[in-house]
Amino acid sequence: MAPHKILVGSYSDSIYTLEIPTLKLLDEVKVGHHPSWIVAHPSDSSLIFTGLEQSDGEIVVVKYGKDGKGHKVEEATCSSGGSDPCTLLVTENELLIGNYSSGTLATLPISATPPYTHPAALWTLSLPFDEKPGRNESRQDSSHPHQIVFNPLNTTETELLIPDLGADKVWRLTKGLDGHWAIQSYVHIETGGGPRHVATYGNTLYTLLELTSQLAVHKFHSVQQPLTHLTTLSTIKASPPRILIPTPNTSFPTPYVYASNRNDPSPEGDTIAIFSVANGEEKPELVTEVRTGLSHVRGMVFGGEHDKWLVVGGAGFENRGVGVKVFERVDGGKGLKQLTELDKAVGSTMNPTAFLWV
Figure 1: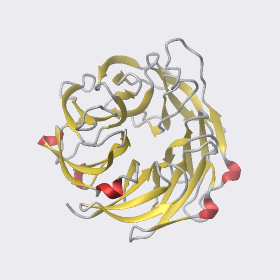
Figure 2: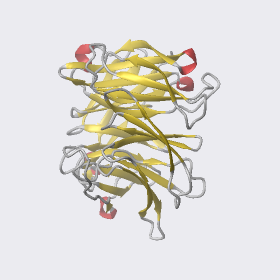
Figure 3: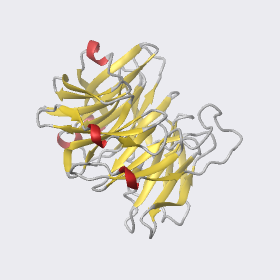
Figure 4: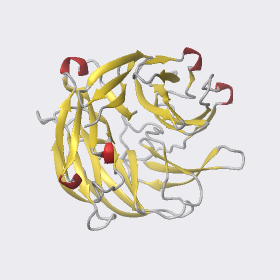
């Protein structure tokens, strides 16, 4: 494996830099409370944005050197436009922010040169929420946006998808003539499902339902038409936080859906469930489950040549399973084999939640 650097978002107060294949800790930048999500500017990968998950949510900018060491750009810190920013999406001149607890989408103008953030033009949108019987009272008391992604299946206009764990909807937004994002429609999710993350392949949307441990499958139509629900599958009896579908390539031509599960009581840790779409993208079939030896798996990202390696982090559950591991895709992507693991003494204080290959 050629050397790579990985940035690690966390539920501590720092962003870390790891080097693989050794998984050696190169750097730690203290930025503030729970920098759980990290993104790089599209034209300057040394410019990193993160959100601090706290009641007065903040956006922090970190600038990195080629040696993997970074520093916090103090003057760029600004409000996230809400509480507990847990998801970010970055474009050339805009940072989109999902504030979990306040149920708001915020847009922050940014630049690749100082001052990097322009908070005077911060804009927010409150996501709708209606009370409904059958919801999880402790987790679905209001709108809770948990991810913001562009919809690659919409080829006619730029569209956002926002899974809302609190409202049981995946919101579909496009930009209006005023330059701001507006809700056009939504994907209905069964009451109490708690949509957390989404991924797409072909003409199909896959949605992880955290609260019912399921994978919902929908066929895409235009933004004006409701999606067709095809099926809902069980992942396992644990809460699934992440879903990935690596783009097929020459090394891994067959597509697979990878869904992490967390808080499994097994001493072998949480699993990564792997689904095949060989019988059609609308009919995913569970082919294997890989035990990670980690607990409360929150972050996992493919990277390296042909997306051959998968870095996985466990934030820990009941004082066990904290750390970072790297797996290699085997059997054409149908399986995963552990390659290396971060020193447990280092990983135990990190509480990793997100990764970024740089």
